[in-house]
Image (tube, rainbow, N blue to C red):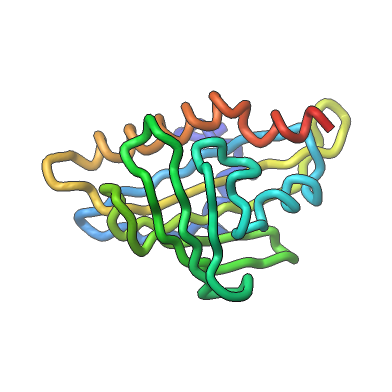
Length: 176
């Protein structure tokens, strides 16, 4: 483990695939999760830009405009209880070979301005079986009236708590 609590492999994947360059008024963070399911199974869920509700329980509906390709837009409806009801998002990258998906929020009724995220999947062995290391990182503007620490802490806590409530991606996978 290094000084930030990440293994050298996690740090290397973040360095290689999660290159955010936050501006002065932005913050960035990354979340690492280890899932007891093989990469192809996890990727089959994550790569579905048109169906994020399959693994993100806070999304109630998603409509994609046009074909599923780089630049595609989706309108996402967020379940009640979160500080948003809709989000318009653009697919920035979908790499089936490297298992990387990147998206950017371009509109909606929320405080996330200039938000972009990258999700990458990496094979690993967990308890002697094929598993997946999922790394999700983001960069976002710090809202007026908030500090960088508040924004990054809130965002990481928000994402972490949603994943915990959902049982992360492992809940739907473990039921198979």
